[in-house]
Image 1 (cartoon, rainbow, N blue to C red):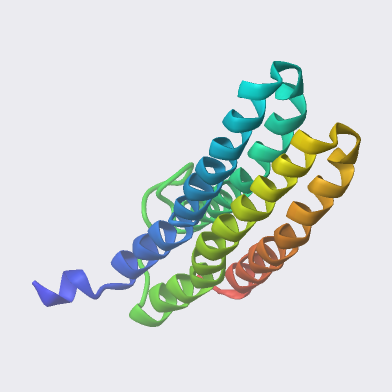
Image 2: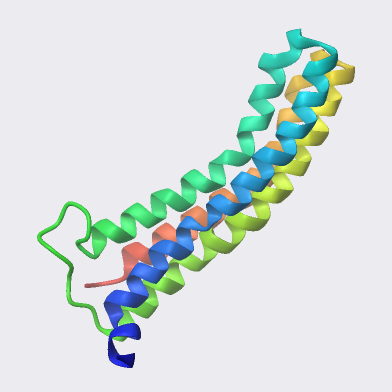
Length: 161
């Protein structure tokens, strides 16, 4: 039984799951920003469009994680292939390792971006003309999610199957 649990195929699938957990950070971040947005909109419903933009920003980490998970599933033949590729344990472990950057950074940056977006939403609540500054504050956190996406993508592309 332990042979199947620690197979290359299992580790690669675990890598796809690892990448997808970036969505946890997005869910929390969008929720935090949504709470702030609801408060602003309750006082001025005309600001809905502006705060919605800020609330959506933390959702990107989940998209990045999903993208890497799809790339993994295609690479190992579970999606759009002729069946799953036979993988060595080393190949499976490499795929799992490649998913770690976007999985972990996605969780923490999604939460941090939600907090920054919530602050930007409060800024818009007090001064609607400052939307661009609020978006810039939240976008600064996005940089690290994009870097994690890039490193996971480059690592995956370097793995020979």
